[in-house]
Amino acid sequence: MVAPTPKAPRYQLTEQERRLLREALLSERHGRRIRRAEQKESN
Image 1: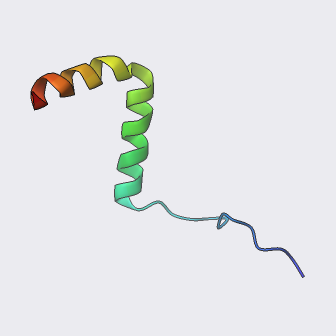
Image 2: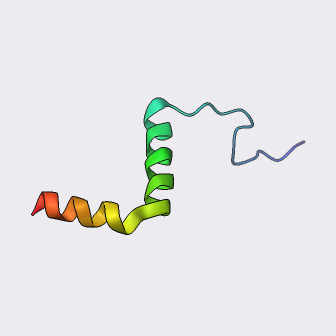
């Protein structure tokens, strides 16, 4: 009996998840600038 793996081997990302991942990668690259801009907009 094989133990169930936490991840499904070929799990397709939904459009929403893909967008979240893309935003996460972008914010990793130049996060401070984006966060500062967002703070200015929200205030």
